[in-house]
Amino acid sequence: MTSTTYERTASRGATTAEALRSDPAFQAFTLLRVAFTVAPIAFGLDKFFNVMVNWEQYLAPWVNRLMPGTAHSFMLFVGVVEILAGVVVAIRPRYGAYLVAAWLGGIIFNLLTFSGWYDVALRDFGLLLGALTLGRLASKYD
Image (cartoon, rainbow, N blue to C red; front, side, top):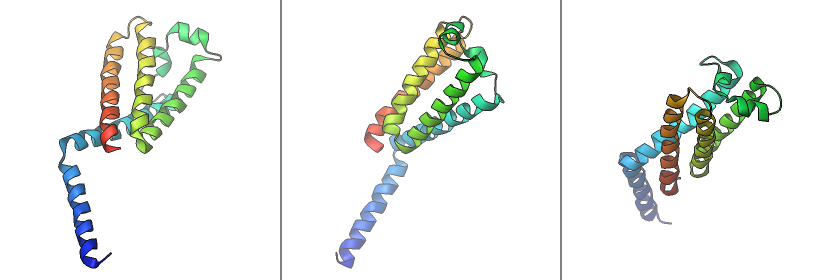
């Protein structure tokens, strides 16, 4: 490769990177990728410490009866899954986004079957739509 060819290739790469940074769809992809990496990891870690909230209060009694152990031990499992989901989004958002969306679907189902948490279920539905949007954007940018 001659230096002239290399310079053209390098400048084309810089132009492509610059074009991506100014592309609103790529910016949305980046924001959603960061959000769906950080939030599941943060919420997953908090399942171990209950600093933000006592997570066990959101667990429907029927789920607690189905799962072995205590509600606390199940929430520790949930925390591990959420941390792993955030890591998968960071590494491969094309797959991680759908993992997070499925996980949020399970959370929504749990909340809708447990009277009193409909507002949280609605919020999580909005997050599920955001995760699906990330998955679609990742099909182009991942």
